[in-house]
Amino acid sequence: MNDKPMTAIVEFQVNTETTSVEEWLEEWSKRAEDARVGEPQTPSYAAAINSEVDNNILVFERYSQGDSSLKEHLNRTAHGELHKRMGDKNMTKRRVMGTRFTDVEGYGWWSRPDQEDVMMRPGVILTVLGMRFPSEQQREKFIQLSQAHADYCWTEEPDTLIYSGGLALSDADRELDIKAGDLIFVMASTDMEAMVKHRDDPKHVAIGERLSADGINVEGTFLRSYETTGDGYLWK
Image (cartoon, helix red, strand yellow):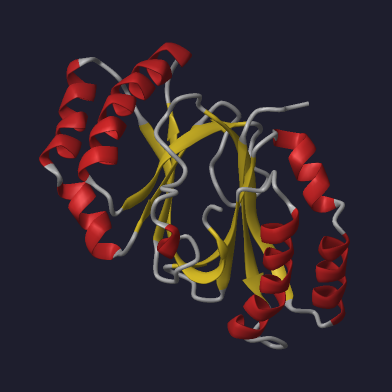
């Protein structure tokens, strides 16, 4: 049983024959509010729209004590009520994908508590990237290198709201190419301009050169981008 801080991402496709995206989010947001006020071990529970498929909704979840926190979340009365209401109305067409990953200790950050105005703001760009390495040693070298860059981003990029990642607990069961032990990286930016600024920063670009010089081989297995709807919360 995993008791480390953990992130879960689950993507759903709205059944547009019965439900609009707005109606789906309105129903889901009731559950999100219950988590915000009643689940101290759920520090993040936010909804975001897939940038390429506008009726796909990502639910971004954080659990401070891993599986035990997730179990408490699933056992909430509000959780059962949500599934019943959505099931009765046939609101969800399918689960597109889902995965869980445990935090890499000391790697970046998952919130900027001083920026309370953005934790429930729509329009935040959420990026999820899968990375695979030929060995654990190369993976650890990459983490060490990017940890140092995270310190720079924390100071110089206040519009980079989340910059961290974790190790996948198991292989993905659908759609995404994820194997246990893959590094799943997560970044959130206040808007697209902030994301592009981070991407094009010379220090960020230089990481690729350093990886090559150190013989670190990174296989990017997937990249998805989402935009928060303002339902739920990125941190609390």
